[in-house]
Structure formats: structure tokens, C-alpha cells
Length: 278
Image 1 (cartoon, rainbow, N blue to C red):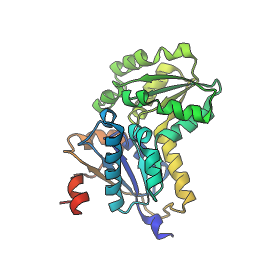
Image 2: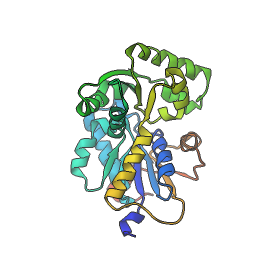
Image 3: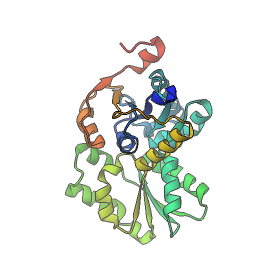
């Protein structure tokens, strides 16, 4: 086996939502080791300028590269929309974001050329999904809606609660008049309440899970670069955060749907400047 293939996949997000991508990676690529970085000290990225987000991303990449990863997944919609194209130009490592895989899947799936997109306020305001969809298929018409309350509901663990159902109805009922046949879940938290969203919009609406589509893209990239691990053991997950991991483990296990052995807090500035994790 190629020695590089033995290395881990690096994944980062501004917080905890990217663990839905890790879950999909574990399901699709069960033998791969994963190093996850949640930049919890500096979230949310959506309130920051593009220049600041780009700086954060470069620092996060620097940390993951110190862990000798073989590729990096930018499991953050804000980061993917604001800075990923520039990073791809700068980096030798393969980079995959969460935005383009979801947009490609939606463009392939829609029959009516009417697509709904939901996400955080920052993602929706960026127009990044619209730009990606129109580049893929200029005839597509798009209905978009920011659904900011979904994130705290998911992190609270109210995945099937009546409050979550009512919130989803308030956000999503207007989409019925638009006539979308496909809905992009444009936030990595949203797959956790995919069941509620599906019940609200109806089974005829195809839900595009960007976490699922990103994992499929990672599998393709690994194969393209001959980096797929063939070790005969389950992959290991190492989790780092940049602030006190209060409740991160508890909430993260809901996203991963499995126990999380350990969450380690790190100081990015100390590591990147001094080369020490202590």
C-alpha cells in the first residue's frame, strides 16, 4: 500500500456541525483514520469578514498538515463559500468542501429545475449555493431560506420535538408554492433533523444531504490520488477543539452516532508559532 494512503483524513469546521460529515465518512470509508478540528474559540465564521475567514482557514490547515493528513475536508459552508477556491490554488494537498458536492447533486437530481436551499443566515446571504447551481445549470430557479433556529435546536438535542416540527413548518411551508422538487440541506447541522424536514416538506421532495455528498466526493478524490486506505481495522477518530470542550463530547456523539473517546483542547497560536501543543 502507498505509504501516503496510511495517513489520516483531516476535517475541520468552525464548531461541531462538521461531525455529520465525519459520520458519513465513517459509514462510507470505515477503515480511514480521521483528525477533526473544531475551531470553537472563533465561531461563528459567518459573522467574520472574508479576509478573516481565509486567515482562520489557513491556520486550521496549518494545524492539520502538522498532523500529516493526506487530504483535508472543509466541513463548513461559510468557509467553503468564502475561501475554498483561493485555498485550492495555494495548497498541494487535495481539498474538498461541502458546498460544491451538494450543488452538483441537486443539479443532477432536479426534474422541474426548481431547487430549494436552506442554510444559516451567513450561507444564504452569501448566495454561494445559487452561484454554484446556476453555473452548473443556468435554467435552475432557486428558492432559498435562512433557518437559523435549526442549529440551536439540533445542539439542544430536540431532534423530534414538536418545537422543531413547528419551526420547520414555519420556515419551509412557503416552499410549497414555489414548486421545488429538490431541497439542499446547506448546513452540516441539518442532516441530524433530516427526518423532521422530510415530513414537513413531503416525501416527494428529494433532500440533498451535503454531508453525504461530501463523503462521496472524498471517496472519489482518494481513489483518484491512490490514497484509499486498505488497512484491516476500523478507522480511528482524533478530535481537537480550540476552546473549552464544554458539552462538545455529549453533543458530538449525537452527530457521530457513536461514542467519542476523547476531545482535546489545543492552542492554535502556540502550536503554529512555537511548534508545541503544550
